[in-house]
Image (cartoon, rainbow, N blue to C red; front, side, top):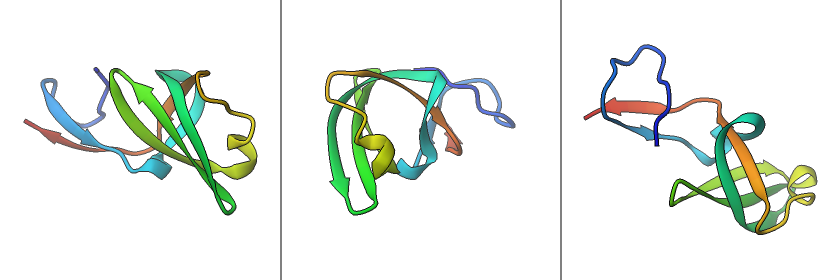
Length: 84
C-alpha cells in the first residue's frame, strides 16, 4: 500500500497509525468493515485494508450506522513514519 508522507524521502517505509488517528472520510484508504464493537461512548471498527486489518476508534453514534461487509474509506490524521 502506498501513502504520501510529508517530510519523508521517497522510498520504502513503515508507518504506525494509532486507532484513533484513522477517521472515516470521502477520499483515502479503501477498506471493508469486518466487525463493529461498541465500547461505552466509543466503538472499535475492524477494517480490512489492503489485505491487513486496521482498528479504527470512532464515536459510538457514528459507528452504530456502520455494518460488517460495508465499504469504508479512511483518512489518516497522523502517522509515525520510519524509512527502511
